[in-house]
Image (tube, rainbow, N blue to C red):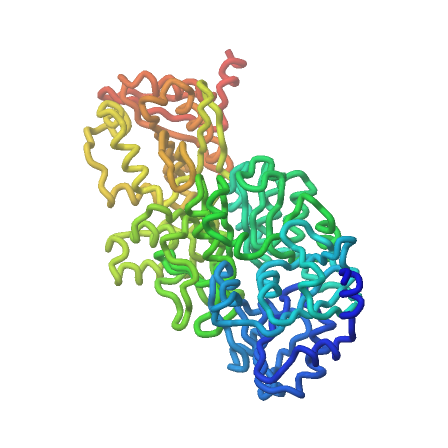
Length: 628
């Protein structure tokens, strides 16, 4: 029999197909998400009252499944691995079931010997091509494996389903019945603007390097972050899903896959979640390939991508780094999905990174999402060992390789300011941090990221300058211990030999308004080395600030000290400070030279071998030259 004859003979109306495959107590899989075969689902609920105890399996229900399952309790019950808008209420009312599972492990449930053998699989496909193959279109994920192992497969054949490349095809002879019906696919839009998400996107963009391969989880926050990557070059995509935001970066030439380790020049995913624009884009597009979940979400496969970056959102995170992403207390909200698969894969990849996104508070602002312990009933989706970075609107906390004390301090300092003191108090109570640990005074709630800048110095030395952070304590200690005794004496006018926690933490916890410290950094976030420090403290009575700076010996004579002084002048002027003063040993010729080149009229007074130097910002040096 030709495939055309087979197809023609098995093309029926939906009720005929369903009555031929359904039976009491059977298990039915339904393609999830935007690819749900809605015409078949509507037909299913027209006939399901004739049956009892049918078990329905579906992820991310978004289409025709009921929200209220009360009328269907005797006929059927839903089991889902990931809650969607059509199943969240039912699960939390006890009318449907949630199965927590890594996406990569779900296909094994359907295979021979697995705990969830399938009797029926309802899928959504393209019309067959000239060779008799139908494409699963925008949703391959666990559906392909389900279709390959179900006893019966019923397919809605839809001319509006895009034909996608990759491992998306089933031959018509693998399908039991065909129901032809053309209808639009479900669409999802994520374009709502959010100032908080924009700030998070700004911070995350600093963590994603050019030529990285990215994965992003589901939701508005991750979509917003993707759109902030538009300045990157040659990104790759290996993700459980592709969205409109990814499509836009492909069209802009940002996601090229040119340097991907696996599938170069291909965007790899297992399903699409977006709008009709995305569906038109992936249709017959060789740039995009979809594969089953057991391949895309395999952590060993993921880890083979160099610079693999996993970006996922959290509902709550404790100050040790444990992440809850599927529930709010006892109430299940979503699911584990590909979260752990990609966190593990990225953490094992060469130059890989894992990034957790967590707004500082609940939407109503009443609860901190950074907590000392997860809410009662909350599940740990990602263990503390796989979390590298946590980002929110107040900054980035680097956790990789950090002790519990350092993690707690980093996360407390990006919590919402109104919760920081309470978090610190609780952290002290459980002995996570020093008992004398302080927090910076909150003059402005946001970290002054506008004063972050890169500067190139002789020898092609690229240094990142930024305001100091409370988490710089250990790096600052290491900086001071790296200075020769003579430099320490020059800077402090005393022979200091130790730099204990009580002194260093005071230098790191500043208000950025009356006191400012800028550090020069080499290395990536989380692996930073301080090579230079410039600092001023304002005397509010005189409106003059005392300034000092230091540079590691091996980086001196490159202009770093001069840059720091000029940069501090720029910051101080912007805050209305009148000028700077400093105390410099007469023998410290290098520092005296830097001050005399600053561009302002220098006043000085020598007493007992120490120069008191001061200058005002309203007295530029060229005035002296003109007057002369």
